[in-house]
Length: 162
Image (cartoon, rainbow, N blue to C red):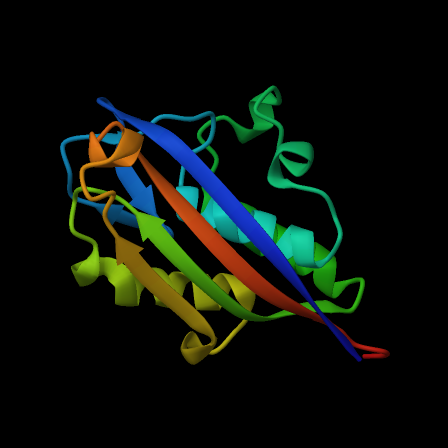
């Protein structure tokens, strides 16, 4: 048995005409995140953290924005797909910790639902997923409300046999 760690980061610009989706939760807000898929920065950061811990590249290699199959894709489903593929190689997420960085909207009312969605996708207990939120304190693209970012750390265990 070996445990590996990975870091993930993602950010997207805010714009009109799309829902704001974070961790698979649609959050009422007048702006959404712009991207090829649903632009869910939470799922994207977690995917990168899990892939990094597994030494399997990154989300851009796995789900390129040049591939029309991933246009408007549900990123929670992409995370589930990654977890399933890793399980076939005896690699299993064990813990995820993440921080969403958004000036607005306030995310406290949605953190439990985000945690539950991620835990289900990662096949973890909810207590093994930690969701935090902070603002940009008025600094940078987040502070100016131009975008939202997320940082994630994942622990992945390789089992010797199933």
